[in-house]
Length: 383
Length: 139
Ligand SMILES: [Zn+2]
Image 1 (cartoon, rainbow over the protein chains, first blue to last red):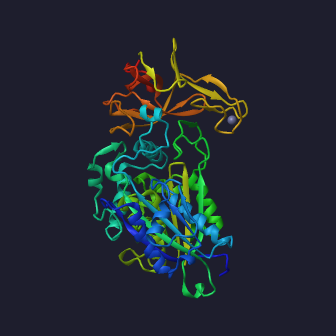
Image 2: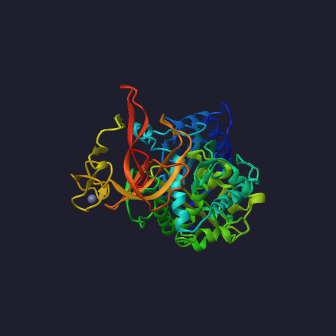
């Protein structure tokens, strides 16, 4: 293992859910303390730099956590990249180590989302007044197009929910820990056809933390989890239903998605490809989003996502389990924390510490987020 | 329909009906909506202002059943994408008959739709929408 390589020295998480008066700082403290303890980081001088991913946390979110831990003093930088905020922080942290500037870096992700529909400053007020900003409707339009190009049914969409909610039962850090049936999903309230309530993830609160460290000679023997790629990309112009949510786009269907750009970059950075993967955590903001990710990440060819679902490939005992954590459909989505929550899950899987969720023999894992901006991230970890 | 536009410069009502106001790029020839100082596809400056076609085809549709943040108009309302002959796909409200399922590819025409009340004038706040070409709803 060369010294430019990056290992995961520690991970920590505060469960995702709704916690009343507890602040995002409170949650971040829990996650950061656990990750620092696991990494054996005991002094503030050991933390070269802290990056904190958050979308709604406000000014100095990272500082508030580090102050509460009495670990401030070094540089602390908040990072906003929508749903990919935590992954963006991870990318910067890896760069800080690879550049030789820092030995050990703390990466935080935290969020306490407003309950219900989320208001963002992304749109102009007139777009809101005109009713042109309904997030679930954009998800629904994307789902409808995917259903047409990949020959999917609403039962397929419901099956994604059934799979992920069943996975979430075994995850103590998830918000929803009850299984659902296809009929229950289809009987839940129709929000924006074809999407029903249970097909949409819930905004909530949570935090996750990762300590990255420059690899040492003894890391190989110790079986340390390596961070092999942390790629972040934005959208190309012209895709009317891309996560950038423009008001118009071109009447063409071959504009690469931000997720595809991130995946391509991550596979190149890691020297690995989709065939090497043992498990994936991907963005399941809604049920169709997971299926679209199968195609964007190259897990299958165009139009083939339904097959991966129906033949059990992405089931927990399949050839390529997807969202064994339960996904955002079970965990909920605290924007700034969700990407690092995926990383925490995958690190535990690669260490063989995932308990009832353990994917046997997992050695190569990929995490994916995508959301407004557009921002898309792909992270690859190996053991 | 009288009323105040949600924003000036987005659409026009003419004898031929409602048209959206877009641009055509002098360099890459792509159209865009709404108008902007540059082509948002290739970055070339000073695109040519054009009136976009008043009719197109439905490309995707759904219903919005709960008001999104900052929206005070009626729900439910149709929402989707219409493809215009200029090679452009436009995000739009849809004026649909709730009892008739729309079909992707069906002809649509631009109309005006009331989206709330202008707080200053008390007049209707109006935005563009698309409606099935053969229906009598809308304008
Ligand atoms: Zn151009």
